Length: 496
Image (tube, rainbow, N blue to C red; front, side):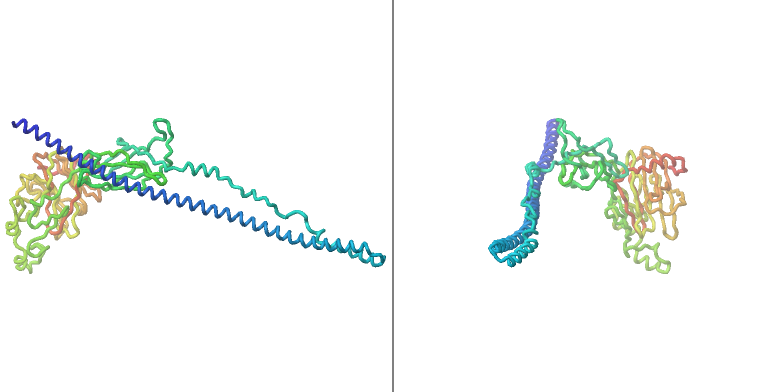
């Protein structure tokens, strides 16, 4: 019976997973169908707009050519009309002179005849008919305006949709994940298809890359998972996505090519594993006077908010006692069994470290006075224990209350560090090798390193008094840590 129930539970689990997968698949198909309808309307509108532009261009060109022909015709007409008018005038003058000459032949008086003949000779010399050219000044030929749009007509008949670039192929072997950045490289589609046809998609002008985070090694997006984030206008066949927080198991990437106006299909999505240490503050462990909000912890004492008896002058000692209750009494009123109390203004991380390497960073807020950061055995740290004062905690303590100081603490021993107070601290923990390093990230300086042998699960640990801190998690071990690990193992360390 129990065996059958267990088998049935496995079947139910398999069916539930398949059901979720099918639901995600149907959602993807439905979204694709909606996108198809929207895209078809878009490209149809673009086609109509292009045809309208083409028609307008033909109309404009036709009007321009008709104007040129009309202008030439009018110019020639003016010249011919002028020549026609001059010819008519010359013809009339010639006819009058011819009639006068015929009349002169009938004169019998010799004196009158000679006088008329002389006039005829003078008029012939000056007659317009003898000064006028008898050839048209322009020709009726307009062959210079002959057109032949056969080539253009063939081109119009060959009009078709722009070829779309084929999907590139992501080159997994060339992709690099380092320092919370992902360098993605790809290969463009080949110049020729497998059947020998030449790729006529045109010159690829740029690429577009999309990426998203996921906890599943699958290209399908599950409900609630992050949407695609986009990077446009990539001119090379690689791009680096920087400043990522690796708060998921994988990052999925895909890329597509774009020519002058058309974008092709995306490449097959590729999931790349993004290992990093992610944790948050365990609010259940926080001292009652610590406020946990996201990645930030601030100290907010009871009574007069933002004050503490250490921050007031002795002349106000009596009033401070009445305004700010004793930490022990205040914590006792609010603390749960796991909450730190007394003057241990401590909060722990919510994820244990039991193997491998881990890295995170801390930044103090602008109004900070004192804080500690390190690691501790959760099980061995009491409610009233302060970091660095027990055998189960290691920390870096910074203070600018009364005077600036920086020290490494463990097992109630402290080593003062001669270095300016850092504004960005990197914490590196190699559980397997027993290494705990504190780095001034802005100056790339090793502040201190502990060498020990961890025997219990560790958690990040923090103490905040007056002010606040913020942490950054989801970070890979930075590449610069290699330098510190190889050159600083011989430093004098505090060990348990």
